[in-house]
Image (cartoon, rainbow, N blue to C red):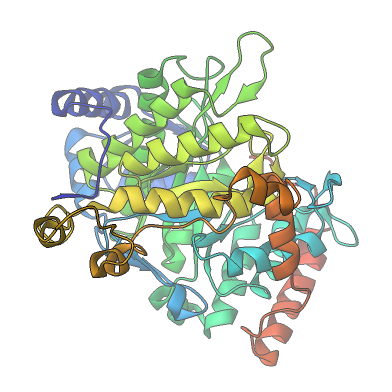
Length: 485
C-alpha cells in the first residue's frame, strides 16, 4: 500500500548537515532583535545578549525546541472548520494569499482592493471546500486612517467567514487591537487561549534581523496564548544566497530563531514554521516567486522542519509571476501545489494570488481550490489489494464483457476527485457549450455563488463590540505617524 505519497528533496544526512549549519548561525553569529523587553526575556532565559544582538547556546536551542507542541488546534469561529495538527488524514491545510494590495475582479478591473471586495473575497473563501483558512489582504484606506488598515480589514473579514485566519499586523501597536477583536468574538481572552480563532504572523528582515514590530508581535501573541506562524521572506540573489539550499538555510535559521524566542517567552506556544521564499530575476531585477529553484528551496525547507525538527511547516504552494490567470499561471500554480504538497508541508499557502503575491483574483482562487482537491487525492496515495485491483471481477471474466455494468465500477468510480470546472467534454460538446476556457468557466461559477449578504456568524452584541474597538483604534492610532518595522 502506498499511502501518503511523499517527494523528498533531502537525504537524511543532508537534513542533519543543514540543521548543523542553521544552529551554528544561531549559536555563533546570532540575531539582532530591536526590542528591549524581548531581549531582556532572552537574557534571563540564558541567551547571550550584547546590545541588540542575541546568541543562543546549543543547549538552549535544544531545550526550547522540546517545548514546541506537536499537537494543537487552530480553532475557527464555526467549530466545523477547526484545523487539527497533525492533519488527521496525513494531508495538508490551505490558506489564501496574504498582504495583497491589488484586486483583479472577475470583470477584469484592476485596482487597490477595497473593503467591499475584501468582504466579497472572504465570502468566496468561506464557500470553497478546499480553502481552509484566510489571511489578511491590505485594503485601500478610504474613509479610515491608513494606520489602521489591518484593523478595518480584520473587522470586515470577521463578518464574512466562520474559518480560522492568520493576522499580519501592519503597525507595531496594532497587534493589541487585533487580539482584542478576536477575543471579543469568542467571549474574552481566556476563551481565546482555549479556542484561538486566529494565529499571528511575525516576520524577519533578512539576514537574521527582527524589527521592533515583529518582536512585539511575538511578545503579545505569546502573552495572549495565540499560535504563531513565524515567517521569513528572503529574496534569493538580493538578501539571501541564490541557490535553493542557501536561501533555505537562511530562511529556516530566521524561522527557527523566532520559534526559539516564542518558547523562551511562553513555553508551549504552538508554532508553524513559515519560510516564504522569493528570488530576484537577474535579467530585470524583479522579485519573483515561481522559479523552479525557489520551489526547490521551499521543498528543502518543508522537509527540514517537518522531518528534521518535527515542527509543522507552511509555505507558498500556489502563486504565479504572471499578471493574469493564464497558461503560465496554470503551470506555475499546479507545479507549486504538487511539489510542495508532496514534500510534506502542513499548510499550502498563497491561494488566489497572481502578480507575485501582489494581487488577488477570484477566478484564480476557484481554480486553486480545484488544484488543491487533486493534490489531496494524490497525496492520500492508493490502496493495492484484491478489492482495489478488481481481482474477483478479473477472475470472473467470461469473454469480452465491459466493466461499465460491474459492481466494482459502481463501488469505486467516485473514489477520485473530479474537478467541477475542468472540461471532460468532447470537442463537439465543448463547442456547443460556448468553447469556454477555464478562466471563463471559473468566472461563471463565481457569479453563481457570489453572495452580497453577510453570513450570520456573529451575534449583534459582538458586532457592536467590534465596532467600538475599531472606532477606538482609529482615534488612538490614526493621529500618530506609522511605526516603522
